[in-house]
Image (cartoon, rainbow, N blue to C red; front, side, top):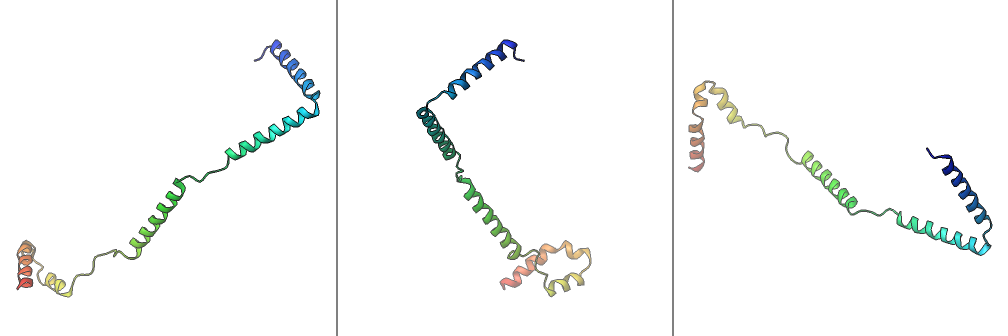
Length: 116
């Protein structure tokens, strides 16, 4: 907490500065106002928002993500195509475990039939 001497000094300095400001001539007051206006204008120039390079880049990336998501949603199939009727008949006809034990043979047989 400031001491009494500090407070007295502050009050005296303020009073002295206020008296000096009240006694300024018109030319000095005009120059001070002009300097203040220039300082405010310079400050506003520095504070103008600039578009960062990342803003358009981010917008482009977001747009591409939407395009890819839309493409994936509407174009890419979401499930496998249904099996052919022949395959279903083959599976229904051979319900035993022996059929599944010889799958390699049936695969080889299918490739031989396709080749020949």
